[in-house]
Length: 172
Image (tube, rainbow, N blue to C red; front, top):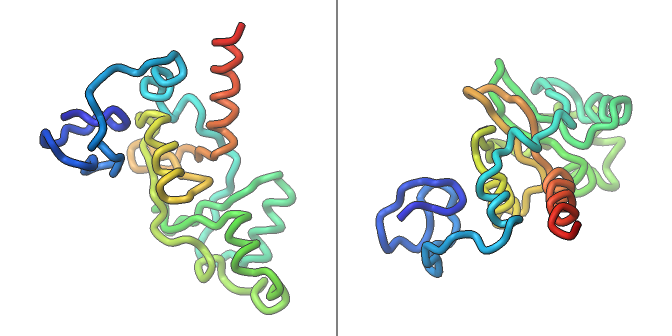
């Protein structure tokens, strides 16, 4: 059975895709029913991923990172070590982990407060796969890779903007 989200070949009868973990128990193999569903399955992340992030080495402090966000209007930092994505630090992390402790933690290395080993997706993956991971994992940002190198990030906002354009196309 081919997963409708990531196109991974799975053994017939499995309850969840071995790659993206989407629930396949109710999947009947039918085609997408709307233009929006077809677009989410057909279009790839490279069409919507953005550069709305900064790359941060492990030794940047929390304070340095947040200052750089403010200077560039960014919302997250993808933490890299020797070119490898090792973590992600987002506004949500800052609010949840640092609230009320700014003076104590602003000089900590970002590596102490990042989300380690974040889920990453390929720029060739369908948008629906990112949406699935965000829903299941509670993520708001997912790094997007091309040939094992960071090439962008996809956020909930990016997907909502994409959907808003699709709704507009359908309604007009």
